[in-house]
Length: 77
Image (cartoon, rainbow, N blue to C red; front, side):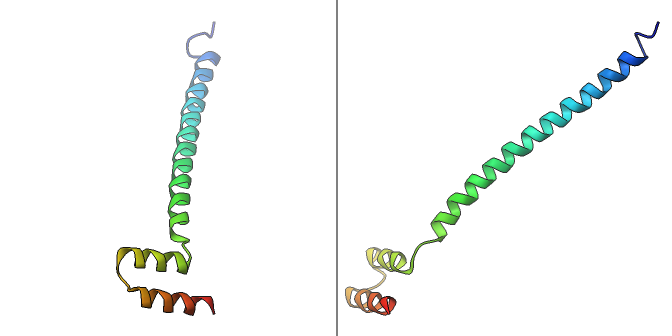
């Protein structure tokens, strides 16, 4: 009878390999998904228009109203 080391023992070995492979794929998909979402958020922040950046600088007080108006006109051409 070949119940111990024969056919059934080999079948359980492949089951363990497939279980490990299954969890590797799941972990890979989780890591890939989270990195995709974090990169997507940073890309949205980096795609500000020149006028948005100009408005932020004016709001922070980096430039005066006259500079703001002049730069805004320069951007419209």
